[in-house]
Image (cartoon, rainbow, N blue to C red):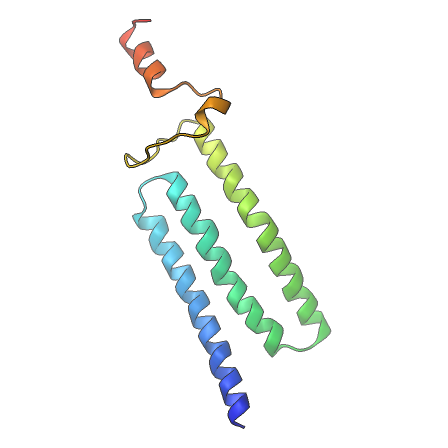
Length: 128
């Protein structure tokens, strides 16, 4: 009896923590300054926010069909979320989305075809 209550308490806590991660992701999407940090908030926090309730579903629904659905959902979320976030951030970079003023290093620049800030300023001033 006490063991079942403890299990239910732990599962309820996992669902609440998953919801908290989703709330943090939503706040991050509103408050963070640029597309790159927003992408980080959306991908990491939402992935964790979705995985916790799915883990609870694995425990609560013990039939094989529900377990297969939850495991497949977890697999696809874990494999596609980081890839999608990377591709969206890369597309934003190639389109010239500005980074936050606090960003100090652009490690992707030597490998991209995007002109540097110095080249852009030179082109704007008309001097080469």
